[in-house]
Image (cartoon, rainbow, N blue to C red):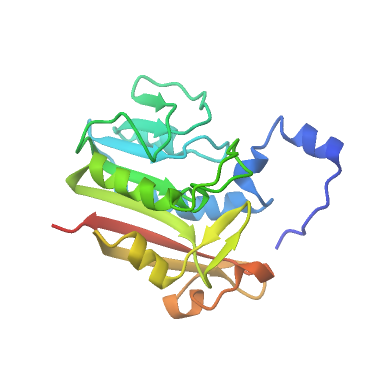
Length: 228
């Protein structure tokens, strides 16, 4: 595992020229993004003209928009911060996922890669007003704008329930069941770090014991379908 580094203010300011520190959090964050983005890309595959939404798309680690347009998707990205990626099959929308201007049943697929856990928390990404129900509101909006047969791909921190302010929420099984009560889980995969710091697939029962407040980490990767 890469060592944790203590950075001086000058070095942090310099790093902002190259790395989206707010979105990455830790220096090994790209490793988990590879896992999460690979999951999404494998599920989506190639297509012609279907619409996909990437929620919280503004991150320098985010290769989804560029990858998905190359696979034939008509890609939309939504974020309160601007994304400068440009392509004729990519449409950036500067809005809040809790309240969007998209029509009902607009998307064939929606992705929320390490995003839901931040919605409603203040102190990062320019958010100054807290909204404890932010993640709930976001999921309700996803239900409105996704087609009845659409797929919702989600990744979130998993383990013992926690609010690590201002970083993120950590969800447990009960919380996810409440949050996604209108959805059916088609597939769920859990990752956690082993003793040497490498990420590996683990049973849900193992991931559920992880205490993120002690520096341990686990993530849940979910493929969801709306209940009919």
